[in-house]
Amino acid sequence: MNRVLPAFVLALVTGGAAPLAAQLRDHTFGGFVGLSLSKAGGADVGGESKLVTGTAVGGFLTLGFSRVLALEPQILMVEKGIKSEEGGLSATIKLTYIQIPLLAKLRFPMGPEGRMTGVLFAGPGVAYRVGCRLKLAQGGNELAGGCDSDGEAESIRSFDSSMIFGLGADLGRTTVSLRYDLGLTKLDQSADANDIKNRALILLAGVKVGMNR
Image (cartoon, rainbow, N blue to C red):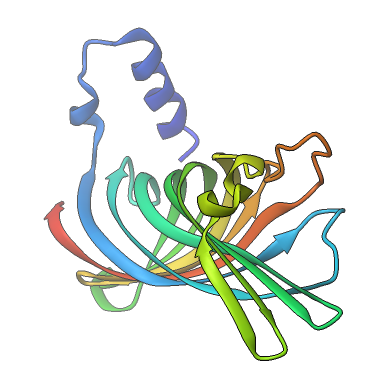
C-alpha cells in the first residue's frame, strides 16, 4: 500500500505515460439508500438538543488501486436537522443537502475466496443546501412550513463541510455501511454567528450495478 499511493499521486501531478485507468485494479459503481439520525453540535447549542430522523439516497464510484486501497467519490441527497426543546416549545429545522464525499477506503477480504469484504473509510465532504423546513410545536399545536416563508433560511448557511468516518461490509453485489458525519462549518451566518454545526449518523445499504475486476 505504501508504494501504491505515491504512484497514484505522481500520476495525477505529472500526467505520466501510463494513463490512470491502467493503474486501476478494479472499479465498481452503484446506488444506495438509508437513514440519517442527526442533531446539533457546537458550543452554542441551546435548550435540549434532540435527534432528527431523515433519509439519504445517492450513488458511488469505487476506484480500486490495490486489493486493500480504494478511492470512492459519492453523491448524496441527505436530510439533516436540528431539534431543540425548551420551556414546552419544540423547534425543528430539517435541512436537505446535496453532498459530495470523497472517501479513502481500506478493504479487508474475508471468508472463502474473499467473497465478503470489511471496509474502513474516511474523508472530507462538501454539501449545498437545497431544502429547509421549519416546525414549531407547543401544547399540542403545530406550525410548519418552508424556512423561506419565515425568513429563517437567510440566517442558515447554504454551504456545509464535514469529515466522514465509518465502517462497512461488501457481500457480492450488496454493500452496507455506517458513518459518522462531523460538521465543520457553522450553520449560523447571522451577525451573531453562533457555533452550531451538523452532526449525523448515517446508515446506508446499496447495490453494485456495475463491476469490473
